Amino acid sequence: MPGMRHFMVATGGHVDHGKSALVKALTGTDPDRLPEEKSRGITIDLGFAHLEIPSSASEDGPLSLGIVDVPGHEDFVKNMVAGVGSIDLALLVVAGDDGWMPQTEEHLQVLTYLGVRHAVVALTKIDLIADSRAASERIRERLRGTPFADAPIVPTSVVSGRGLDDLRAALASVLAEAAPPDDIGKPRLAVDRIFTLRGVGTVVTGTLAGGALRRGQEVTIQPSGKKTRIRNMQSHNRDAEFCGPGMRVALNLPDIDALKDIRRGDVITLAEFGGASESLDALVEISSRAGRGLKDRSRVNIHYGSAKVPARVVFLEAEDLTAGGTALAQLRLEARAFVFPGDRVIVRDWAEQNTLAGGVVLDPDANRRALRSEARRKLLSERARAPEDAARFVASEVARKGAAPRRQLLVRSRFSATAISGAVSRLVASGELSSAGDFVCDVAVWRDLCLRAAEAIDARHRTHPEQAGLPLTELRVALEEHLPTAELFDALVEALCANEFARSGAAIRRRNHQPALPARLQAAGAKLRETLNAKPLDPPSRKELAPDPVAQQALRFLLESGEAVDINAEIVLAAGAMRQAVDVVRELLRARGAATVSELRQALGSSRRIVVPLLERLDRDGVTLRQGDKRSLRR
Image (spheres, one colour):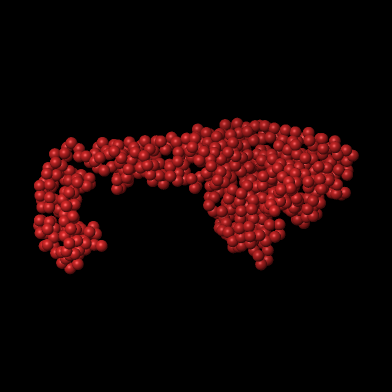
């Protein structure tokens, strides 16, 4: 049997249009929970209820609906905003006797700003009107030009029960076409309630989005960064080991003081997603149905999830925004907020009387000083064209940083690891990005690094042809100010060595580079070769061999290139003589099993001055093994 699918539904509508009564009639749960709500007869704070209904598609499992009943009175719109942060469907409630009202319109605009795309309209109190068809037509006219223009309108009455089954069927039908909340492996729970239970401790509730949480899991409270773990968890009053996106969840958090360590609006998440933000760059829009605009540098309240943060709105173009317009802006927060790119926010006036605008976060790591730079404008404009396109975000993020590790790319975002990986692969395949080991790079930045590295290596070959190559330490220093991140250096060397370059010990060189003595050292080199080959196993001391700086430089080249071998600080042999000596020693020891220095000296036809240091070198190299005054081959 297919598993249960979880969705969140939010009510919306004017005060006293019957939202809470409708929720109670549908679910059997009274969402009005506060004593003040009971006495005043209106919903002040968020109320929650649960409804399970069969799917309209026979092949799908049942639907589990968490219903958020939000206030309708204008003073409590801020709480309504908190309730619709993770909503899959809006249940818009319009009373038949009142019709469309100001808060109905404001709720509609808020739902639109938050990206809600599915709705069902409940026409309530139809027992008080004569013509429900005409009332439905008036509502349909109000919905024209909105994302809910085709939403089903269901006449209902909680007094007679009329239309309730039709309403459940309409919810099932619309949600059958909706995708369940995405599990992108990035769980976030916006805390909307906090309380303490005797013998249990601190409990928080919220709607889980973006990923799953498990009992016993280590979590982080943002924006404070305080660590804790999930001792126990419930969903709709049932203990759970695991909860996924779209579920109402209660978490028991040990060692957390409900008054000091956590507050409404905080986010329960994982430490790997980074910290909170002080400024947000966003695309801000005002509905064409709005009655007022938004002035540059206005002080406002930013609502996101279940939180509210005071802020200033600063437009990139320094112009006021009017109804129906969109603009790039920076939201300069007065308290830190934990948000991802792609998150939706609501902008309300400072007095909390009016909803002014909506916005989608384009960059949670905004730089106040660089707001109007060309690079910043380009990044935000690129993201604003398609806020849900992972490839645009990947490309703009890499362009901003120059390079980024694949595993850290857009970790704090609404894109899954699979979506990010797929976007990277497509961008690399199309040539828009370059791949370098575990890094993804801006094409121009990568090309510049490769060119600079090649030029530095070639310059070393020209000035010091006798050297094997350019030491990697010197190459790192030469590129240091051009590397987007120091960790990219190893990937650069690996990429170079996969093509025209090669490692040579601790240096790097072109593959076709053959060390050669420069003209000024060639005569000294020829004399050294002649001297070493004249008496292969009886050369002069190193001081006699290279008595001056020029000869010493030439000798250093012969040693580095492998033409000569230093036995110790005083003795140097030609490489051929060294190979010949090793062959003689091995042959004699294989034949005799062991031999003294004197016996080996006679076989080599050399002196103790040479043979003793030579055998000590072979001992160190693991060729021979000294046992008393004899040596044997090391096994």
